[in-house]
Length: 212
Image 1 (tube, rainbow, N blue to C red):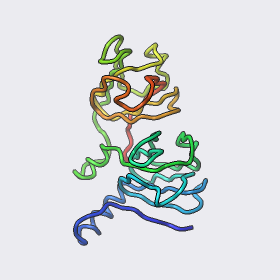
Image 2: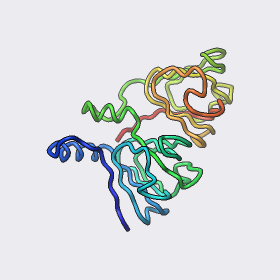
Image 3: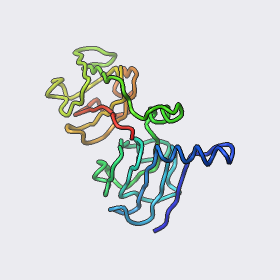
């Protein structure tokens, strides 16, 4: 089994030892070419726009620390997958459509908190408003808790715009946190294309709570 390691680059050797160790402790993900954590593996502790040179396929993942967003294609394109700390013995466990993972990044909140040396957890409130029409039109509903079944609470299968007021959230295309995933940080999304999908369908959504 071969092993490759990728980490953040720093300017001086003295800084590299201390800061790289600190960063790696707070953010580490390991990609394996085969299922059940077998085959060649690649350890990463920072954003990478193109993983193609490190492995050709990814069939299992171990997230040791940090919250990560993985992408099907290089340069943070294609299907995206949100992963927290844990073990994923095959790509079905992260709801992948195939064994292609070509780029990755930490959730923005993790990067900011690491740089500021703050606790790696969102400790404030969570609040999101969803709308049945673009530009915050039509029926509105505000949530502060996870929503496994959007239709049961909102009475619509589609969300055309939303306002993320507090905390990071993840939208899922299907109910019960399944299907395509979209990471949303605080801000205004006047149309569904602003958060990345090709349709307004949202079956469930939940808070991003754990950064350890």
